[in-house]
Image (tube, rainbow, N blue to C red; front, side, top):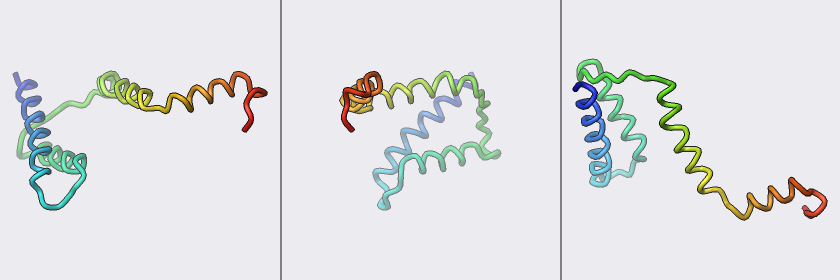
Length: 93
C-alpha cells in the first residue's frame, strides 16, 4: 500500500507542477520545476522514500527514449546515409 501512496503523490506532484507553471508569471522550464518539487518531496521531514533500482530504470526508461529518438530521425537522410555507406562509389559528396 505504501508504493501506491508514493505513486499517487508523485503523479499529483507532476500534474500540479504543470498546472502551477502555467499560472506562474515567470517562465521556467518544466523539468527544472519538477526536479525542485521532487527534491522537496525527498526531504527527510516529508517521509517519502523511493528505492532506486538501476536495472529497473534501464528497463523502463531507456527503451522508450531510444524509440522516440529513432522515430524522430530524418528518414530521408538516414536512407541516403545507408545507401552511401553500402555503395560509396555511387554517391558524390
